[in-house]
Length: 201
Image 1 (tube, one colour):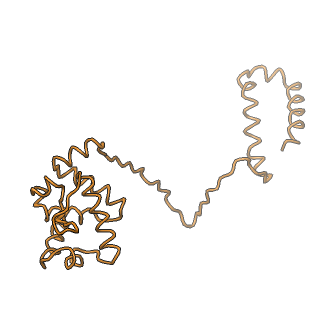
Image 2 (image 1 turned 180 degrees about the horizontal axis):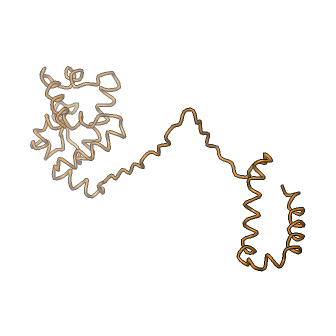
Image 3 (image 1 turned 60 degrees about the vertical axis):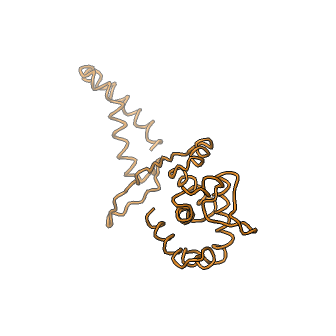
């Protein structure tokens, strides 16, 4: 196509010299002439089988058209509490703060936070017993001496419970409250009660 352009320009000059009087009557046509020439060259290039510089990787099958669907962007907004808010909420036995703190630890330890919360709910009377308030023992755990264990903060007690369940029960294949029942508690209804609380969350 580029080879033909000088030849085309030469012919246009000859045409202009021969018909200059007629063309001068049409000034708009003269201004549009470059555009007309370009438009005339485009189909010529296609007919010569020349490739365009612009290519795409998209392939369309006319025999089996498919709709291009763009997935909606999903935006998740999460709200987290500061350490001070967590500490204050746990000290005041704020149930929602306890849940939020346990959900975070659950992801860290790979332990269902509902299991930990349900055990605490059952053993401490909805986190309201004197043992829970005075010694941060929410889970009815006993020390090696046989007396009830105590922790220095609610955070320490809850984190220790996650570690305890992970290393003493889950790692040994006891994954449900029913399986834990025979080791964790003396009564036979403990597993059913914990399961019921978990299902209510």
